[in-house]
Length: 483
Ligand code: GLU
View 1 (cartoon, helix red, strand yellow):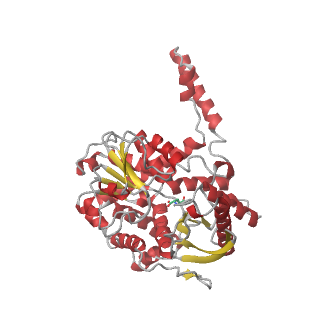
View 2 (tube, helix red, strand yellow):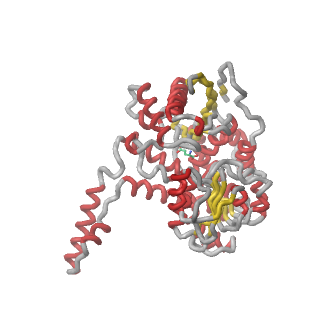
View 3 (tube, helix red, strand yellow):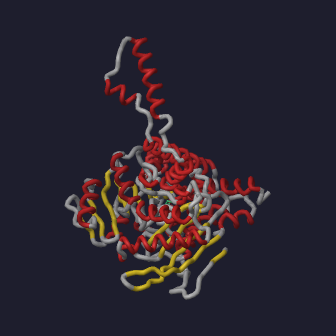
């Protein structure tokens, strides 16, 4: 591992004992123990290939502040490496390494041809003005360019906790202005605003993917029988932790799919209503007040995380890592936990949950919708054409010709509204959402094949790991690195 620390460190890049990294590695080891790959190959798949630790000065409020930041490239078995950039005070080298490793496994599970990466800046974005955040982001990008830790063929960041399309547009602009002869420069980062090379559907993608994964599970009769639950979403009560991009969209799509959202948890409190919370009204309240607390359509609970232990069928932790630990795991009442966040359950907590018969749907599958649509965005940037641009009108014409033939043969005709629905050609968002839905469904069934068909696999996370490790091992074999 190449760790490049500059002098004058404000504090150590290592936080010491990091339960998140330990959990990711423990989960990997649990799956690796029941696989037949050579130890050296498994060691290479598990290892973090490179980490770049940087410190740089930024002018903040009239003074100079030294900013600490990282970018980890966990695996180069496929290129580019891919993964978000996080702005939070929790960021340290081990957190970034844990997140980068999860990206490797995640990309393999959903057949996205990237290695795993992750970046982070140790700041609380709430403490900075927009101009300061822009200066920090642009300087971070310059550091990445200098060390070849960014580029459409090298390493492609995306949003994560504390970042969004705005930060991605600053990164793209900085890259484009410094790397002048790269025709694919816009593909250096994903999650950009649509007007700056982004793809329609990216913002909602993680929440939408989560919805597809949960819908697939609750419509699986065999699985529901095992859990002693009925199929479908309509009788399912859901609690979501986090009301950021992932939590909000997950709650919205689950509600639209028929589930009842009985609790939403945020860092400053939770809101609960056994009759259901209207997600859009809560969103409007949040936009106005800057908090979900005090929402008229529900009861506010000050001790937000206590709601993780409330009665529900489906719990969606969609905030940060290590939220369900050995302290609260015995009190969790949900029957299904769908990991919207990366690493929300510690490896110490998971056996407690599994013993209680809870189905844990793992992060590397459940929250993969974001990187799936990032892949589509990157493809769009490399092809320099909007999805649907070449075929939308042609498809509409073909459908109309079929309709006209059927009308002529049957003597019956459709209304204009019916024609419009049937003959509509797919636009970019339709194609993105359909590609995402197909990916999540295919991955679900590939994982369940291991879960149901391999007696050594006892839980869904191990099934996903086995699926993922097999695919990564395969790419090393084709590269000729291992026999
Ligand atoms: N940060 C997201 C994740 O953890 C998205 C990564 C990406 O799109 O590259 O999956």
